[in-house]
Image (cartoon, rainbow, N blue to C red; front, side, top):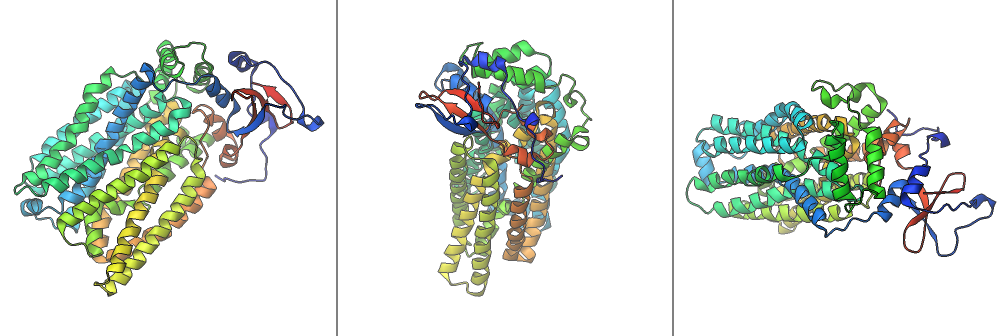
Length: 562
């Protein structure tokens, strides 16, 4: 699977504009030949875009962001966001609870070692076990029912864990929570990306994945406050709150519209078109954007796809496009968990290693770290629909390596001079900086990359596979992390410095750029011999003064009408 080659993509493989699209867009034919001495007429200018047809459709079909339909769409995205909140809540929860005196007096686990490893890692084991069932639920019964069932299982796990007094019951509750999270986080990102208009897709799906901070920040604040309760409720109350977002999801999800791509894949074409007209077309059935999406869905979504067979994962292995698609899923799933961010499960231990030993101060820094990381992630979300994915991943990963290198160096220096406040502050600042950079680079794209890389009939299975890989890497983080931090302390960070450099190289050679195209148009990219090279192809269009596209400039130098 090579990403580069000497062979150019032939002109016959280039995407062309059909006369039907020209008629749909209502653009008068204008033809000129740049190679014959022609030039763009006065009052017009050229623009480089990833896909001329999509860009033209968007320019003529602007969605009113304040309409009733758009507000309903925002609410649907928010419900998907709540599913990610449930996952993020747990990510910040246990690192704080483990440090609480009353939790330790009940379970006597310590803050590192094998018992802590089991408590943390059984959550990811549950996620791995639940992943195949999550795909079946989402494919067979729809994205909405998948989110509902996930919420139900999480509430069940919450009851088990919040009433526990012994480690075995605590571990069983963690396992059940993991199963529920797996079901939710397969259905929710698929739903978010499938209901989003093409030019909102990056922000909507990136915002979904920022739900991690929508859960982790409240968890850090709640545990900081309940730490002052002088009873077991100091740790039981935060566990009970794990059900909060699940209740919001379960009460709301059945009032939401179903994904139009799920509907189209299940032979419910009229309902799918009705959704697109209402939410993507300003209630105009002749909207150019709606017509483009419907035509591409009909061509790209198979009614006999692998979503109809729970056991069928063959396209990921036996087809060229399938192998490239699953490669994107594998890279973002592994790199998004193993770039040093897994250290966040043990923030209180990290803070202790750099001289912060007071528990309330550790929990306070945990809150600050979550807030700073959220700022980085939300900043990236604002630009996700405009920023190319590939450069962000390459340079962002290198920056992560640099920040971790500074942190590990200063922590090493601090180990030899415990009273040096400059080293301690520098180590703390570089750790916070790493988390901001990581959140900017990866948090939105962890939701965007796998959902964009997968087509409709493979999306749930691919996301389930992604969930399995994320959980497997999370298991390594959560099981090996406490042991490594106990035995080699800050030196564990060196592993991630070297690995992040390798990740950046892999992104350069194998990352397929997906920004600026519809989900169905990406099929053309993945069908090419070298998808990385094909994904970097751009179109040139000619814009009138009002910003509307009037021509597409082809490789031959002729401007074809859109």
